[in-house]
Image (cartoon, rainbow, N blue to C red; front, side):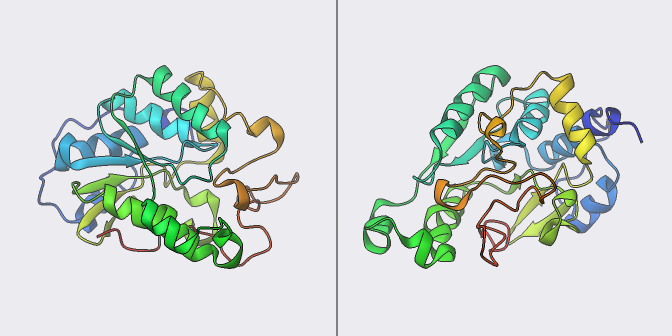
Length: 246
């Protein structure tokens, strides 16, 4: 398989009917390139009803590059949890400028929730699921209310609960597109290389996956790339992909 063409791709010429179901879209796009999937999402619901959710993490630039090539004005939702690395915030600004993204929305948790449930900023330790809920899940539920579909950057090669994700699925009453589901590690690296995308600043320090500061750690050679997330716990997902966003 080519490490270039399947990842970059070209748009399909025939528009997809807006009333197609997730199953219909998944069958139609099962072998499509990421750019084709983003373009199909745009045709299916229109720009005003479509959002990209990005963590601006170690692999995020690839999807954002593909989105920018299709339409840089598609809204991008970024969850600023209050626990992010300064390097991630800087990377958000760098990529926004380099890719020409026109509508990046930084969403924050509700102050009243933080004051009521995490006034001491220790909830990440005592109840990480609840911490993720008030800092990620609830803010995203709020941010996605105006949209009929959203795009994210999960990949099957990341393993775990992500190993069998479809290209298109339902998420409550919305469509959820996974344009990078079929992409391999080598194809992802090719997108970075061919598009001259800057790496996340923390990659050089040994972080293969970056989330909130208390729950992200460096990975050792040979470890799974997400091994540094919630290290020592059974937790593997923050909840935005396991809790319905409706």
